[in-house]
Length: 86
Image (cartoon, rainbow, N blue to C red; front, side, top):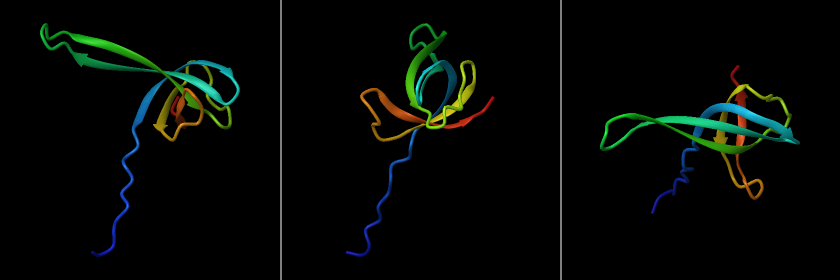
């Protein structure tokens, strides 16, 4: 066998709004997605909140941010802040 290539699975990236920035090095980001109802064909809005690691505490409440999946950092934190968009 020739060289084995180690392929890292692509990290998931999401974009959302900071809804809470009251903890040290952690912000809560709300990510909204739109999906179509299978039977009634109506657009439905689904929302999920992620605990995100913010090392430099640069995100404030109301900011639009980009987050990326990472290894577990604590019991609830599996995401880290990539950048503040707005």
